[in-house]
Image (tube, rainbow over all chains, first blue to last red; front, top):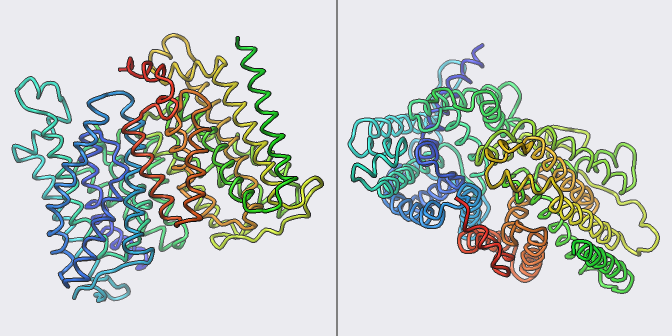
Length: 288
Length: 320
């Protein structure tokens, strides 16, 4: 019983972390409809950026995440521009070629990381990494608690931004009816580009969390394709509050399966849940 | 006109197989066969992928699932009964056909990226199951002892090279047949506009299922000899995602409007990779794959055949 309770607690912590790595995809795929399969690859790239800063200048990983966030914002602006010019503006089977395009990008990022950093696992150092708190039977690593707190803050912040600020509302409006926005004199492409920049910028912090939670390796993005898309689809496309709930469900499910059946089944859980959601309720938990 | 095309095609096939066979008898150095086997395998994969991915426009990322299932059907059968290679390939094709039916039923109602993601999901789930399957070695993999080599060939690699050439011929002639048949025209109709195709009486789901089954059977069959080639099989290489990306990249780079496209793409990219693997490294291989994929998707949406024959470009321009 204690074991199960421990698994659930760790699962909730893990779930909030999953929300932070998925929330950007919830904007780019959920709201903007960009088939962004390279999202996890950008995430791992951010982790390596954090690793580099931590290694050479001994900066705290979270601070390093903040440092690379503006870079990722610009990177996102650029990526959307390329995507828009080559696919959305031309309009011919954008879906099919868009997926292939982002898959190609993901592969290129993977290889560049391997060529720069090698295939070994990399981790960061910080005062809160390696220690843990004991609660009777089970221990909670402090790195998990830090990741949980920051992830929760990040997700809530983005949700507030999208629902309360002018720009946030514009982003949601462009997702709902681009044409109406154009008629009102706004430039939908500029708004979408900005939104994609935000969605990518969030990955700076999320990448820091990724390498705080566990060591990273260049092909880690493949496991996160399942997790991030599972969360975004289960949430109902574009729903930020749904993202948090769906991510916690995934985290708890993974944590319980890990405790009960062992690590060898872990990679399949997110994908199995994703398939189940697609087959049974494709509009997601909080879907429109 | 069509009849004459057929004669040219089958004459080409006969010349190709004769060339392959005589090459195995004349060339003594074994290296060309190791490299050639991989290129032939990629031709079979790219052509098989394009039957669903190209003709119907459903981007299947589960090529590695079908390939791995082919590998492990062969391994399991060989370990259990010591069945000969031909039986292994036939069994792999049958399992691939069944898997294609199951995958199709579950996922072909999904559109666009949801279908693609679902096929990645299936691949990972199947890989995880194989990893937990003790009989075929689990995650650690399994060593394969090759049986003695058969008559006209003096080494196992040469034999596998010939076998894979036959599989290429089967894949290409199947793709060619489908392209010119009612199935192919139906698939192209639903690719251009699924709703309109459905409304004009094209049985879209049935056609997609057929395409998925045939494509799956061909991919699994192409994977069956892989364990014999490597004398070893393990889940993470048999289900490697790079099979999916390679098949897709080769088909898209060559062009998917005609069966010759994937063949050209696979020959171009496959031989480039073989050269690079020898001269530089396997990382550069993947880099080249990624860069070529992105460049072609952005710059030449209809692939090499689109560049060669402007007709395909015109056809693409009219699409909404």
